[in-house]
Image (cartoon, rainbow, N blue to C red; front, side, top):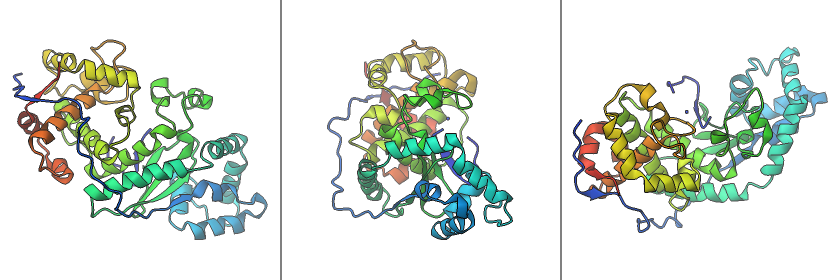
Length: 348
């Protein structure tokens, strides 16, 4: 995704030395004790205050919303709802807001989010633990304020141009059984819809934060993509060490097991097809981007298997160089050199 100027959206995209280091499971991985790390953060329910507006007194209530959310309200109305002059009291723009609030589908969507997310205590607890690990590994980073909203399926997790803030579009986390996902105009594929639920919400929040820190992949080769994405999976695993790998990967449990059991075969395919140093993104797109399965592999394979393999390579590197911090890891920009030093060997 190209760098955008307003805000960042996440959520809704040879001869190789095999060496000696094997990449086996992480059952005995070290998990630091972060219970003593104090994290203070707010979850602000913007959507609740928005839909509490009395449309018969819309001028006063919109002004009150602006006062309570001086920056986020601007961002929400102008960038998400595309209402360019929401504070214009002449009437036309306020009518657009009124139309959004009184539209039957929007009201139904809001009501559904309030049923699913009436109680955010479980989400808050997950976020708290994640932020404790986040502060452990990135002590200089501030904990963001979290805004919840609905956008008629436009945005899931966003980083608006507001200091230390992150937005969560609750209407894109209503679960794979939510039928409007599969209907026009969204027509969401099932392999994506299965991850649009409460179980995946917090992982997507931290993936967004880490992606923002990491920046975009600057390389064009397959190895550049899988190392870049593998780094983020490795960091996400550090931030959420108790979460199942399937959640972090966005796979089912069966797909995660398939990858673990076919690691050697996947690596052999990459070598046989000479993919590692290929610049042909059409050849490896399904291996690094959202896809129902991976090209060149059995139908039961998940998409993005290249990212899974990149994660295994990063694990091998970090096992060889345990003194490497996550900040150091992000700064390693030569994917080919990292692969060589990792001495990655796929498990059989």
